[in-house]
Image (cartoon, rainbow, N blue to C red; front, top):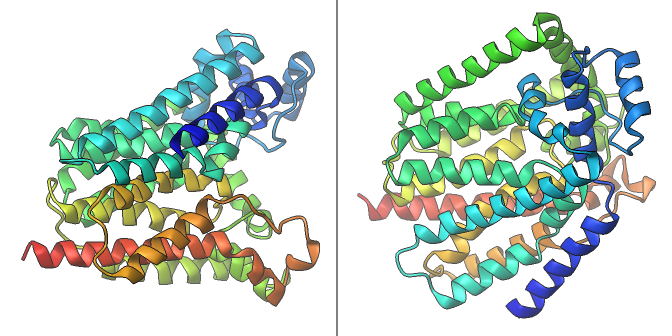
Amino acid sequence: VIFFSGFSYLHDLIKVSLESPFIDFAHYYTYATVVAQGQDLFDPEAVARVDASLQIRRALSAANYPPLFYLLMQPWVLLPFRPAALAWLFFNQLCLMGALVLCFRHVPVPSPVGAAVTLFVVLNYQPLKETIALGQANILLLFLVTLAWHGLRAQRSWLTVGSVALTMHIKAQFGLLIPLLWWIGHRSIAARALIVASAGVGISLTVLGLPHHLQYLQYLQTSMDSLLSWAANLSPAATVRRLVGARANTGPILIVCDALLLLFFARILPRTAPAVSSVMQWSWGLGLSAILLLSPLTEEHHLVLLLLPLTLLTMSEPASNPADLILLVLAVLLLGSRYSFEQFSALHAGWPSLLMTAKLLGIAILTWLLIRRLRQAERAEL
């Protein structure tokens, strides 16, 4: 099973490297080129000139990543686009292997069955394949959140500090890892991560200027309505928005959904999670699920981040309750399988839109399993 899964994965990598336009990486590359030329990222004419010179197909969004991200992408624009995209693909495969190695290091005696199941899930995980085809940054994020977890487990706090600070400059919603660290008792690490992240903001302010940051914040505010009405958005807020209809006010929906979710996770997560403990392990996985649920935009490729808690579940001791095993299989099927109803416009609004919530249901089931493991770990450590 692993041999055939590995062969299929390798085939997909080769096919993607030959055929994919890597439209999300092309977005990174285009705006990093704008920065390299000293132009304004929100100047349509400057972006149009770069588009005309590069002649590559890209995701047609504005510069919607944190400002420092486009500075971090500068090394890639030293290469022509196609070699840069292939180098990015190779780099992300190294990040994936690094994340898996870190997970395996913290399993005292890996079960052959658990290791095989983990590899099977990873090699056949549809969000991972979508991320690779798009050239998205989610595999890098997976490595960073795994490295942050490893830093806590190995009591190397600066690994956690640096990794957490960097994640929020790749995708802003992962700044929620800082309050997560504070909430579960690692307040000094959270404070240092905030300082390092703030230093990153200082660097981007120095290089790109205050006007760009203000335009970035304005763009996030004005684009919220379109994000929540987008059919590919899996977030609870977007699900509620589609359910109640386009006439509903976006702001209250997002506020109510996030407030309820925050209260729920604040009630579930412990106030103290020792670094070298199962409580911390399950709290970290639960935090990743919480971020995807709280974010106003969660797409299928973002689910790559859930490979960490899924790996922790498949590599840990099997659940004593058969129902938990059934739920784990169901979560893997819902999260990792290839399916979509997005092309059916009749399912984009009203009650029929609930048929598009299977991935969200997968996140909910995984969250429930992590809560159960967390409660078991808390009882075991009493």
